[in-house]
Length: 560
Image 1 (cartoon, rainbow, N blue to C red):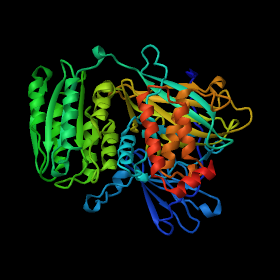
Image 2 (cartoon, rainbow, N blue to C red):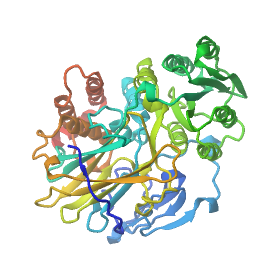
Image 3 (cartoon, one colour):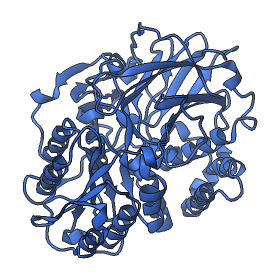
């Protein structure tokens, strides 16, 4: 059901302390300090041990320190201006990463929050899908994916859901529905869906693309450079007159393989792609600089200028620290050039690095493990891949404490935004492309009689290259609350299965009593015949079940 816009409330409630999540099964940091990357490049420090537990998050490029005394019943959580100390990032010297190690992506799982103490949940929308594709490849190779690579939101947003189109000229529309949770008696699931307006090919702006291709020795395998070349050929074949392509390569050095070239010279573009070969070390930062210089040549207010990075994320030569590369990308974003990152290969693949490049570059992060995945990104979803229709998109959900006892946002841990920054248009957020959908799920504990207005959703977004965001408000209607899970919309039930699988794969403490058998049944019941995407997901669930140990399967049976 499409939520009805209501008059916008101008006042925000302050959001005090949050409750801690159940203790993580990971006891490795019992007597130590654990560092979490914070949103927008901040750094957060959580201290755990002997009854101490800290959960911290930063926003807007700040460094935030949160310290909680879990054993005494009080908690600390950085972010949102609550029990935290914020230091501007410029005042904190960046620590070099030893041996160019990948930055940690170990964000604490979102905790349950008491609505009476903190009724606001604020985060940036994210349409990245790389995590699901990476997990799919790992499972097909007979291994369970590392828990730190499983991002729930990227699992959810990989799949297509049927949301109503935005009305008239609005770029975005919000959909709300809810149902009892099939996993935990007494809890409900709330789905917030955002649909981006689909632009026809004739309305798409001309696209000036600069391909930045890693041709270092690490790309010399069939699932890397050769697959990247096939992906680029596919993309070029789906461009149209008025678009241009430039090609920059980097290895031990950088090279301009093709200056900006119009589609009337498609054969020349294909030949430049075909001639690429892998060898040498990796000078990523220099490659990014040259690629952006090419992109700036075609930058104007009437077209799209985007750098598309195709790499395994390795960078080991020259001024290649991750922070230096991120600074380069942030600077060019201000000029109007966006970036899309496309990852290839396994082994030395730097998933977190590629995701951060896309986040800082106002773009999206994908992973290609097959020609099928390339077709999805560069053919079926080309409009969303190339053209941003709304930028710095933020979502704030306000829960009515009279109807909601507690809630937790499932996923989006590295997209959290301080509540006070929701209307701060200087704080960077997410981008949505043509036809993109974004899905978020909340787990709720409702009070008796909950229904109409249990949640109010505020959506803020800027027009592309805009400076000021507009805001729309949507109120949850009572008719959107299903009486039973089996009576809920098919898309909500399937999204529940996807979320459940991701929570189990990342060993979420909230899913300790959930069962893979439940997930399989929910997904099967919500998969219509002939839906290839969902049928593939069912096969992956069967592969996951086969990989789980007999002990784990017995635990599932007991929990079920």
